[in-house]
Length: 402
Length: 169
Image (cartoon, rainbow over the protein chains, first blue to last red):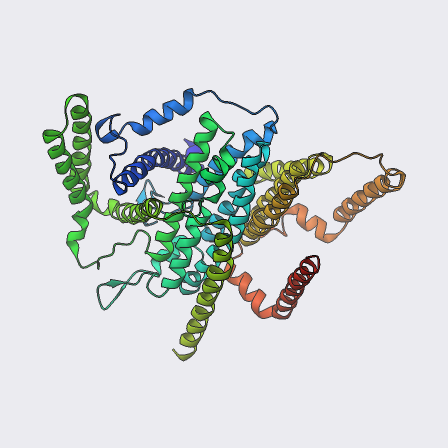
């Protein structure tokens, strides 16, 4: 007991990290399902359908398949670096998520904030420090495979990530000037309040240019379509992970989705008020929105179960229905309701960004390499720099005359 | 008090191992990776000193940008395994003893001087973290001239690199 009470922060952090790891891993698995479903509907297909109701068990089947596939290592590869690369990619992208606050830091359980794993003074810089290392996973995978296509993929990836990281970082500085802090909770608290009583004071309104630059650079940083040249399958087979199979391939896959989540979290925090609600605090009915939303989902699932599902799928969807209704009812309790507000709005905003990601993937064709480079250096960088200069000038003018 | 000590010795050992591997590795990529290890270990040591900002900047600038460029260039040139030559006589008979002499001299200075004893007793350590606000106001008020001079120097270096690259075309 003495040890636990002395090191309560350490123990609480370990528990929070374990829970977060579990949640993020599950979210990663279902993000693949979400992406396949949405892309399928964009292309007038059904997507995963046969494994479980609505293909809901597909991520589990995929995971098992990855585990049981033969793990090949090319004989001419650099063994140490070849094994290191996927671990580096996945661990760095998961570490970055630990810095994200999912709810207000003043909600305590046993004296410890529930939704914040680490509330450090320079959170944003730390996040950039971790994500800036992410390129090594891809570059080293490409190099250590000792094969032409992965090497080209790794080279393209390094060049692309160096180029777009500049614009990404500069586009964020405008927000930092408005917020006056590098701490995530400070940035979010700075966005509290409303213009005209109902328009939230989120940074994306004064920083719309910065937001668009950030969004573009972020898609490029995560190597997603239309910037997925490192793994352009028509030119490079599968790019940097051509030689990877089995679970090592799955690790790259998970790292990519984890990066998507991190980038969406960052966009939410910097430009869309993080865990703040979009409605004024005087609108008390919003306290019941999370519960009501989940119950609505449960009712839809119940309808679906009754009308369309048969056999085993009906049983599975019944479980989903019961879960949605149960958690929804729990969220309506006045004791629980204030606790779920922050995470609810945060998750909702992240989901919008993730949907946008998938939407872009289903819509846009891939850039050509020279287009990618000239877009990054000749358009995105000057625009984000101009945004920074204008923001700084306006802030200097306003503070001098106020 | 014991946890920071363990972290310090672990990171110091990592940094020294990385530095030795950097010299001994024959594959250029392995050398680059060892250098990244050294930089990360140093960043953690900065964290122990309460210099959060410097630690983050150390990783962003050196591990995240400079070393990425190194790795990129090594990959681009597809640099092969280094060839080993016989060690030069000068390095063997003058360099190694000189290195040891320098090491002993630094240790002796640290041991004898007031700064050294202050470091050893922990009096020089900063108890809280230095806030980024204090750091930047010092940088942009007190040291503004030095800051601008460094910026100019880097700008000149960039322009020089551009000119050199253009000439070779």
